Amino acid sequence: MSSKNYSRRQFLSLGLGLAGGAALFGLAGCQEGPSDAVATSAAASTAAASSAGVDIDKDAFNELIASVEPAGDDVISANPWAKGIKDAGTFRLGATRTSAIFSQLDEQDGKVYGFDAGLYLGLIRYILGDETKYDYTQLTSDTRESVLQNDTVDAVFASYTITDKRKQVVSFSGPYMTTQYAALVLADNTDINSVDDLAGKKVAVQSGSTGPDVVAQYAPQAEVQEFSKDDECRAALEQGRVDAYVVDNTLQMGNVVKNPGKYRIAGDPFGPEEHLGIGVKLDNTEAVDFINDFLKKFEDDGNWKKLYKIAVADRCGVETIPEPPAIGA
Image (cartoon, rainbow, N blue to C red; front, side):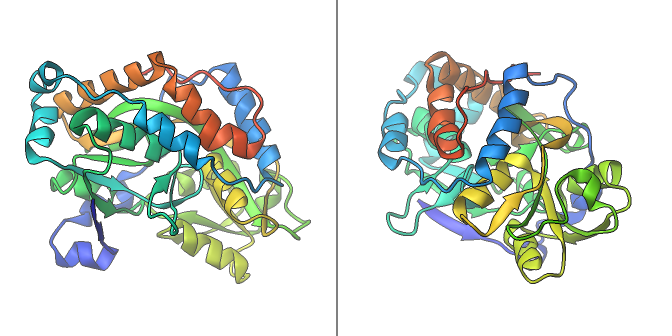
């Protein structure tokens, strides 16, 4: 595999057109909500993550990926998108490597672990027969649309919330997970214990995400400060430039797991229940259909629940594995 790490400035200099940017990202979750199990699991896992710090079981993760059976030649040949990837011999992946829950690079073995990582490695193995055959482009929340619009990547796996506005510029497979939002504060902060306590506080959010709209709706008296990446938001929190950081509650669990004793999650998840999907180029129905078929097979084989257990539940104290959201919802 190879990797590309493009900053916002580099994207502009390469002419990859970030005009889609933040203006195209709005708050508009899918109409279908999660099952009660998912909603209950979200609250329970957020609470448990306040004191968690468990590393992922690498052996179990690697065994799960290795168990994915590559698609037959007839399956690949029947889909132009998958056939193009197979003929190229590599999958052009847009993702991140900084989320302990979703996709985290392990510096010791050079491998990536997490829920999103399990899905994209499984898909790459399904198409190419080898999960290491991919070219990696690192994304921020500001660059997810541009890399699809300019055909830089084949798909985006980046805890990507499906919204009506985003569906105007990209297409989505999935959804594959349901989430809400949560507020992250420093572990010794005793002033903020719920979304209501964000009133009058400085709150970090990621630009180009649905975070600014969520805070505007649920904490309208908060002072929002936008940053481009998760680590910039957390740096602002640690330096005292903001009082809290609001983002997807599963990402927050990852931050707590990755940094035991440094942060805590302030209260229960809040905001709309949002679906996470896999982004592909607009109107690429072949890509949408192929990935959805893979996801269905992944679920039917029991791998979705196994992956959730390995990447999320075992690390965050979740006792009940939720049902995955309905694909195509």
